[in-house]
Image (tube, rainbow, N blue to C red):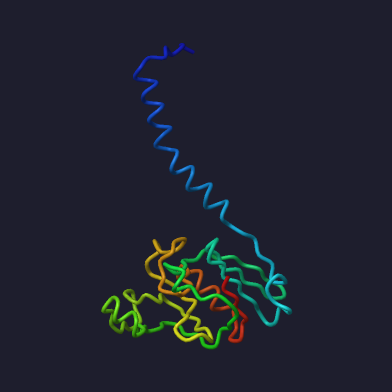
Length: 177
């Protein structure tokens, strides 16, 4: 194998390549480091029919039943002001939800009603919580998952929310942390 002489161009090229790779490596290690494993016993007295912990810091939704444990990546609220934390439950579920913005969303963004379909920000499925205007739902915009991008809700990929929709019964206890 021929020996490569270290010349100035080679050093500059490899140095530039390593600098370009550094942000990607830092991002991937930060994403891995931010994930926090959860256990339902740390949040609820009983498992109940099903339990969900939506962890806004690690951007993951954890779901348990007696024989199932699943984790789904999520979007989270864009600000602390919009992030409601505490205990709630799933009170209603809908396939093909329509969306009506809250009064504050209409005022801030001039958003209007959107019927079910590809333009709907609730995606293909929605699970409404006992807190008014807070929903676990899908999204057609996959760029939102893993980011602070919602106006208060917990968003999942449409495929993920469809899976969760099938296994999470009405009455599922939910904790947002």
